[in-house]
Picture 1: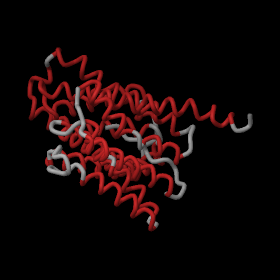
Picture 2 (picture 1 turned 45 degrees about the vertical axis):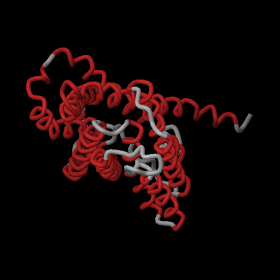
Picture 3 (picture 1 turned 30 degrees about the horizontal axis):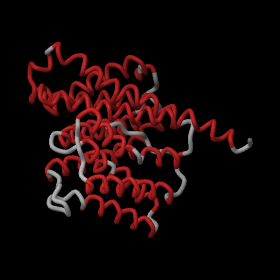
Picture 4 (picture 1 turned 90 degrees about the vertical axis):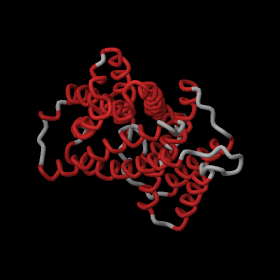
Length: 294
C-alpha cells in the first residue's frame, strides 16, 4: 500500500503530459493540412498570433512585475520559440511528422548530455547519430529523407535547446507569465514572414477554425497541461515521458495524415527515443527543463 500511493499521485500528472503530447502532435497534423492554403510560414504566423492572444488574455503578464534582466532572457526565449516553430513547420513540408519530431528532439538531447558531461553520455550521442544516419537518402532499403527538410528539423532542435536554456532563466524571473511573453515575442517576429508568404490569404475566414484549432492544440492547451505536470512529477520522469514524443508524432502522422514510415525510419525514431531516455536516466538530477511545444 505504501508504494501504491506515490504511483497514484503520479498517475494524474502523467495523464496530463500524455494528453499534452497527443494534443501537440494532433495540432501539428492539423497545421500541415493548412500548408496548401497559406504555406508553412503563414501557418506558423497564425498559430503564434492566435496562441499569443489566448495566453496574453489568460495570463495577463502586464500585471506582474517585469525586470530588465528577466526580459533579456524572455527576449531570447521568444526568438528561440519563434525560430523553433517556423523551422519545424518548414521541415514538415517534406518530412513526415514523426521523423521531424525525432530530429528536432536532438536539441533537448544535447542539453541533457551537455549538462552531464560523463563518458556514458557519448553512448547516447552515438545512438542518436546512428538513428539519424538511418534517415540519410539511400540508407539500407533506400527509403531516405529529404535533406533540406531534415536540416530544417535539426535547426529547429537547436532553437529548442536555446528555448530550454533561456526559458529556464526567464521562468525564474517571471514564472508562468514567461509563456505568454515568449509567445507574444515569437508572434511579432514571425508574423512578417507569414504575411510576406501568404499575403491577404491569411484574412480568409475559411482558415479561421483550423488556425484557432492549431493554436489551442499546439500551444495553449499543452503549455497549460505541461506546466501543471511539471509541478507534480520528478524532472527525470518528465524527461523520460517527453522522450516518447517522436513516437506519438509518428502515430499522429499515420492516423491523421496517412504518413507511412519504412522500417528504417521506425528504427531511427526508436534509436533517438532510446538515446533521449538514456540521457535522461544518466543525467544528474536537475529542475525539469521547460517543456516545448512543436
